[in-house]
Length: 169
Image (tube, rainbow, N blue to C red; front, top):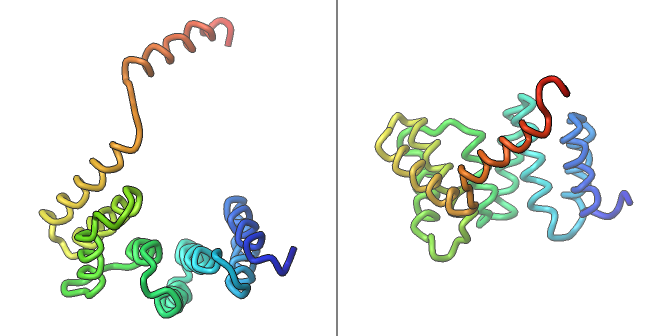
């Protein structure tokens, strides 16, 4: 379905997971060239993929295009933070701080992303106090998204060890 942008976007994700970077980039670009809700995600994943394969300048240009087309994109702002080195006075830090202050308008996963991005930003500019404060907030929020019972997990692992003793293996 070469003209179905949402399918091209999913194809890009699959190809990226398989390590077929160039084909994934082609699929992401094809998805971005078709109308639909997938366009923003396709562009963001294209930028991230470019960054991860060492094509930083192309990634920067793609992020600039995203910010023009989707100026309020929280996902793009957070992804961009992972793909840049912040400097003191960087306006992106203030933009992220504004998002962090809007916690009531963000869902938990968005809050987590913003606080991790701010942590990275402050680490980049060697401001450990702010970095660790945001890291603590992000980790506290993340921890609240799942239940973990160490006693249950230990019992489960003992059961596995009993079911598969060394002589059997």
